[in-house]
Amino acid sequence: MSVTATPGLEALQPTHHGSWEPRRALALDVARRRTAFVRWLRLVFMAGAIGILILLTFQLVMGSLGPTEGDPQTASSEGRMTNPRFTGRDESLTPYAITADVAIRREGSAPGVTELERPRLDYDFLAGDSSRVLAETGFYDLPNRTLDLHSSVNLSTPEGYSFASNHARIHLREERVTGEEPVQGTGPMGTIRADRYEIRDGGDHIVFEGNVRARLIQDRTAPVPAETAPREENQ
Image (cartoon, rainbow, N blue to C red; front, top):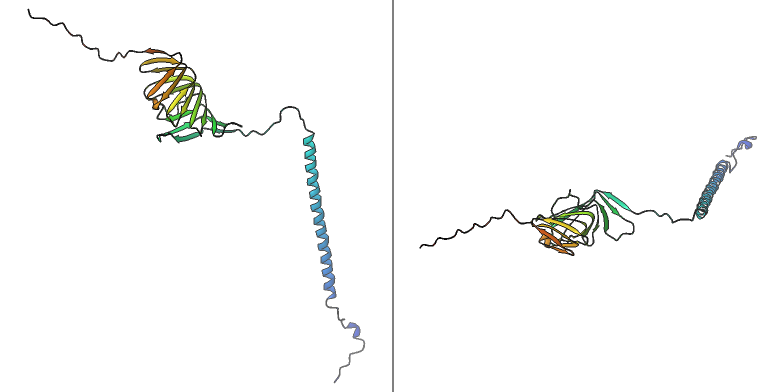
């Protein structure tokens, strides 16, 4: 049995491609928009790169046109530290501690050398404590374990000797002090003046050299030997 189409309804029948033609048009529109967006991004990136290149060129040109007279100003690498503390031990494993008001690392200074303002030393080799200022300025050489003191140097030993000078080098490894400037010293035996001095063996030996002048003080507390009375001879 065959079915005959009703005449006049063929125009209402959908064609073979009618289901995907609108989708194809929509996809083409999206592709066109994506392509336009990518082109816009490329233009933005190119404009940014050109702007950076122009800025770098401008800075180079302005730098070359700057003033050339005078010394060039370089960034300082000087470092400052307040209330520093350095610790260590000598050859006898005796601990010591160095403190100061300010520590300065100068640009171009030797490695491990620190400049100190109003240094102090807590060390059994020398009398005093960490609150006692040894000098106005100093230099701590960490690799060599030396403390150089300058200007208004004041040192004391546990044996009761005090020294005033403008220079002292404390050899922390050896428990030794050397001074290349004139020194004034006072102690239990009197006063002394010399051009150079050295404190050795942890203060057991003190050596003075150059125009040495000493004034000894007699110990008046020593007992005076009793005088022997004359014997009477029997007649």
